Length: 150
Image (cartoon, rainbow, N blue to C red):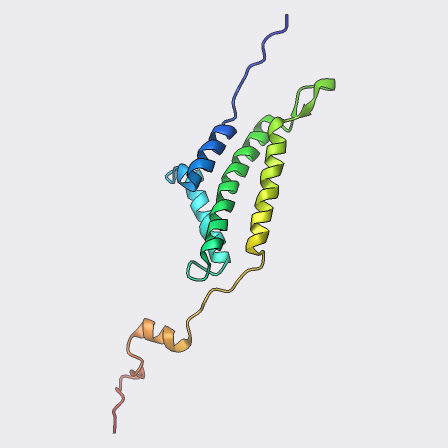
């Protein structure tokens, strides 16, 4: 009789269920992975021009790409630790998670393509606006003398 194969779970499907139901709120933001997700999402928003420049549908797509990023990282970690091939010899076959991983990468690529892969410039204030916010009153010439009317 063959010895029983040790069964171990990778946790991918449980994470997928949690994330698909609750979105990015299912991730504990105190953990390293949670902080990395926040940084990844903020980088995507900055890449699109900042919070003030993106539309609600773009924000929704960024959140969707964040969910896919979580799942892709989980699947990548599992595939790297366990290997892509399961079994030996004639019984060797691809890891069942590999097809799921490839589908996730494909879906994330589609979402990012919808967002546009070109970097957008952030809105930069004019020189007058910058001086006004940085130094206050624009009537002040900066040389210590106030403008006088007359």
